[in-house]
Amino acid sequence: MTTAPRPTRQRSEVLALLDGLDEFRSAQQLHELLRSRGSTIGLATVYRAVQLLSESGEVDVLRTEDGEAVYRRCERRSHHHHLVCRYCGRTVEIDGPVAESWAAQMASAHDFTDVEHTIELVGTCSECRAARADRD
Image 1: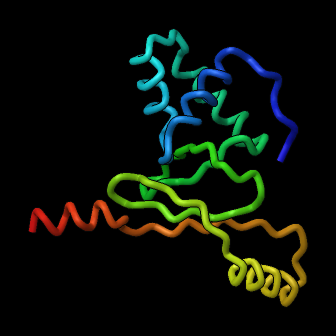
Image 2 (image 1 turned 90 degrees about the horizontal axis):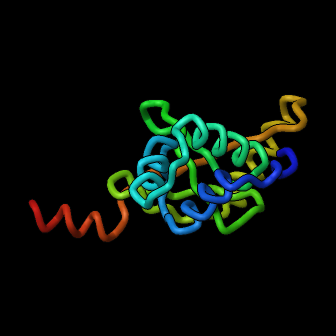
Image 3 (image 1 turned 120 degrees about the horizontal axis):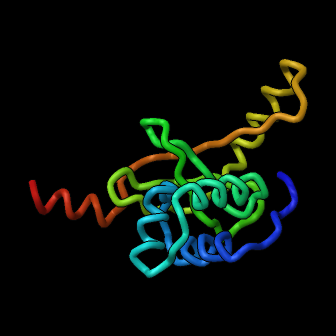
């Protein structure tokens, strides 16, 4: 994690937007939302902003099944994992003490140091499960 980038109006716009979202969004989706709210920010600027913000740890990034990077501003700045609904994108921040212990054990057993990991659990939230049951 690097230090926070110098604040700019564009990054402030992106952060303000992310503060109001509960799910991960792509740079393209963020750009569309910003534009729909009257922003003049360009798509390339949104891509640069989310890249810098993810490098500094101000936003989390994960990859979708098709490899697209999606971004979210998490409440926690400390290490955590995510439980993500595959239908609506609702995201819950979770701790994983067993996974943390396992990762440390594996690193030690294979003489690795400075090990990082990301764990994303994908499932169906209760609202989407109920909506899908109503359709069946």
